[in-house]
Image (cartoon, rainbow, N blue to C red; front, side, top):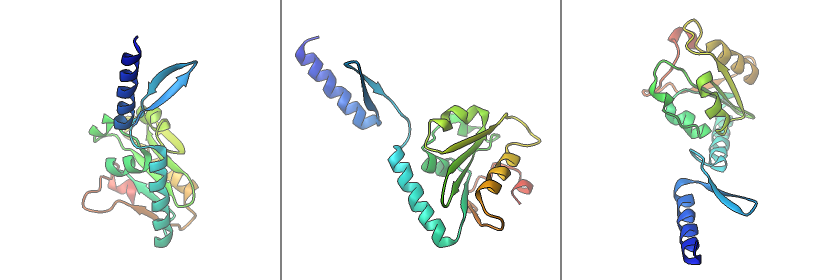
Length: 167
C-alpha cells in the first residue's frame, strides 16, 4: 500500500471512529477498529451520578426502570429485543451503589457488555414467574427495609409485569 493510500485509510478510519464511537486497538503494530454500541461508560456513569444525587434529594433508595428509553439511558444497552412486549427487562439503580439488570437469559450477554455492575437472569418464557421473584430478591438486597423505590409511574410507563406483581 502506498503512503498516500495508507494516510487516506487512516483518515477515513479516524472519521469513522468519531462518527460511530469506535476505538482503535493496536496490537503488535496492527490497527483494528473495536466497535461498541451505545453511549460511553463515562457518559452513562455521569447520568447515574446525577440521578443518584436527585434520588438522595428525593429520599429514594433505588429506581426501578422498565422502559427501553430509561434502561438504555442508564445502562447503554441497546437491542432489538425490546420489540417483544412479552419479555420484561428491569434495571435497578441504587442510590449508593450498583446498577443491576434483571433480564431474561437472552439478554445476558448484551447486558454484561453494557455499563451495569450486576446482571441477574432467568430462563424465559416462564409464565408463572417472568423474573418478578428475582427482581424482588434484588430489591430486597438493595433497598433497606421500609426503603423507598422510585418507579416510572407516568403516562408512558411500561410495567412489563402483571400489575398484581407490582403491588
